[in-house]
Length: 89
Image (cartoon, rainbow, N blue to C red; front, side, top):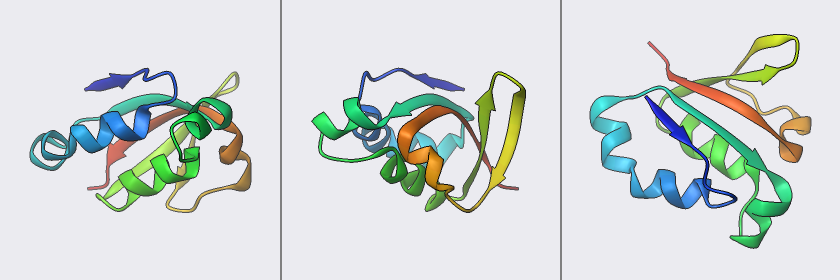
């Protein structure tokens, strides 16, 4: 399990963990928000795409609970959310 709070650097953290993600396929919990990510040159959609490309699916965590999102990227995720990624099996 990886809990990533990179204060905007989540994509860089995940890129650094690429071998770990591929070998162990851990569940990943992170929050990615537009303004902090923009400071590092990417958007939350780039984070989601990075993990989708590695066979992960994701669910969005809201006040109402966990909502599976599947493989598409809803527009509102560009604003940032708490997201749980699990390896698609």
